[in-house]
Length: 198
Image (cartoon, rainbow, N blue to C red; front, top):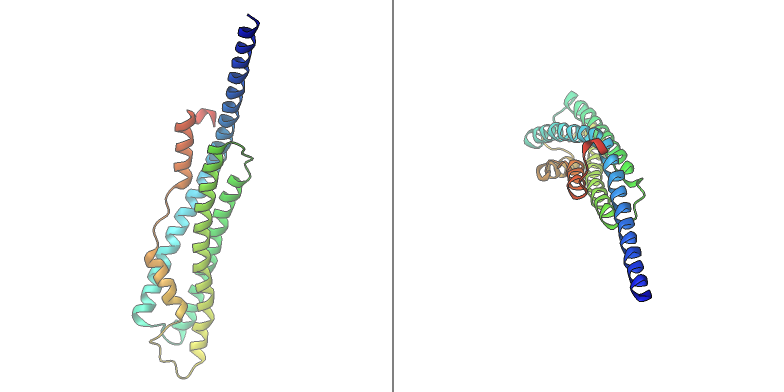
């Protein structure tokens, strides 16, 4: 009889332990889902800005690659556009960084919520690196346009190397997925979370 009581107590203790672990995982999922909900609008805004940036940069690069950088005032304009586009890339990267930091701030112990956070962090970091590469090429190109203006040998039919590299990056560019929305939907489905709980 004593054996059965102790065995039953062990099962109850194990069940309570497992329930406690499940509760912690659920709580962490809710915590992460709340953070994703709070950053969703900021992330959507960054996506829209990024698509506008890429569209503008593609049109600008395409014109230069097809026709050369131009002469005189055109070189000044191209230098100004490169500088402005570089600033836009920085602003978008900063917005993505805010989203990433909000997600990274979550203290998570359980495996699945950690996995969701880590995947998101990796995806956001990759996007920021891509934007930084574009920004660097734009910043490198801006003074080269002005150097062309000062050169007697320049006839207007070439362009900075950075523009060709940027054009290649922009051609390979794929529109960003809504990774924040997908992660949030995954957490809701896996843990049965409702909008009211968030």
